[in-house]
Image (cartoon, rainbow, N blue to C red; front, side, top):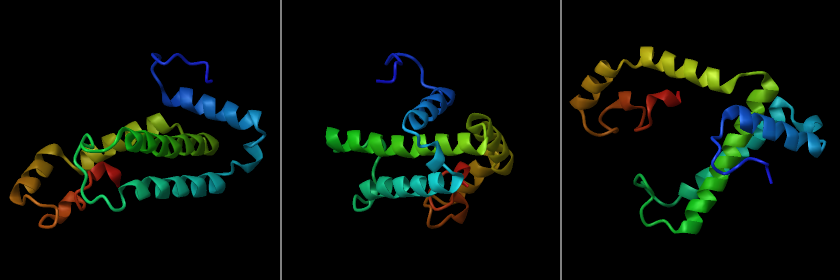
Amino acid sequence: MTGIADEAPVTLDTLKQLMAQFAKERDWDRFHSPRNLLLALVGEVGELSEIFQWKGEVPKGLPGWKEEEKVHLGEELSDVLLYLVRLSDICGVDLGKAALRKVQLNAIKYPAKVCKEVVSVSSTPEENPSTNNGAAPYAD
């Protein structure tokens, strides 16, 4: 389907090229404005959220999930990734470089030593606002 071997590493550049070709073959470039792609991305994030909506806290590795649930999760995660890659391409942003830069900025903003000290003071996200409600700080 894509002409890429299953064993080949997948890069953001590969996905960008595949998405550009996919849109071109269907004459969808005219619909792929930043606004339209962003709204489509938000819709896909909503679909991803629905998977977790009523499951409560889910442990790493998704123990107890059926295989078809994991496949569905992979599909929705892929939709989010593909729209994000396409949006970054249309906006002229090198997503890989931007992500690396963001990790570096967050390393400065959240020094490991300081974060470890703060987290050790309180053990639950509710007690410790610096833990960003349990989410990793690189998400801001």
